[in-house]
Image (cartoon, rainbow, N blue to C red; front, side, top):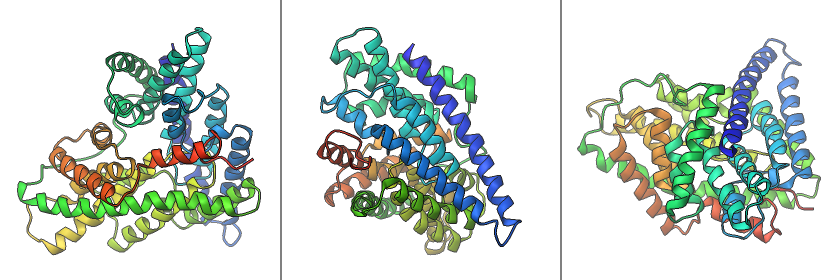
Length: 421
């Protein structure tokens, strides 16, 4: 029952986000036709939506930020299971911040936390023991990830590699059942298709390209470490600004609105941009450099606004961009390689950046395979993911959700991203 409810809520959330994204693009296009005053519409809309989402987060502090760190804290017995009020707060707040405002945030964090709250509520409703309620919230968090990306297998890896960090057969069986039911119900709402469509045949890179992917993973590992630190630094800097959190969110939303006005690909979750890259769409090298630079900064800034939204989707979009740049550089430095490495490196970039930041390489690998339906670059993904984890560990960069969980607990058990009382 909890899996079915999570599938319906998560599927509806994703369906609405897709339609709001299309509507937001239409608004931005319309604003370009009404110069000189048209620019105010998307900027004001983004600022107002971010401010309202932040206000919702003040009403329910656990709805701010990703929510995955709270799921992990509950599983460890460090925090109480989320109340059911998290569901409407994250649902509406996520539609505002991720959809209307177009902030560089993902749908997966809110979906995971809403599903976890539904699982905990089901346990309380059934009058289960406290440990069983925690178990249900953990299992249902995997269902939320599966629904967010239509990726049921990666959800099982997510539970054991990221949340519990250990394998337990009972949890595995229950997770498989909940994920199957949740994804089945969500497909009644959003349909059954991979997240990224129109990807052509991606040939397996020859073994001679292994050194290229090793070097690529070293660079991604370093950049992932920097991204982690930017997220934490942005949260600390925004906290120190002595104005109401709603005002801070409005300012950040206005900045994002200006980015959207300049180019749709500079903000938003990153799904559209990743789809363009994987489908072989042309993006000029200078434009790709600008996209990487802007989104590298806009992601942590958006997260610091204290509105509902995750970091998985922005990471995947940023990784695809880095892979695009890597493929273009390889074409110039090592000409004559068989096949086109650009799409292959974009796919590897998605899983490698995920491995570096989240420190869950198998979850990232399986997630990207399910989202793209491409298995021909599995070997480069394995090599690059392993190398990125090694580099991030050597640089003493903690996994992002471990760092956010510690920050959350230090602030008294509420969300790490919620405004201080």
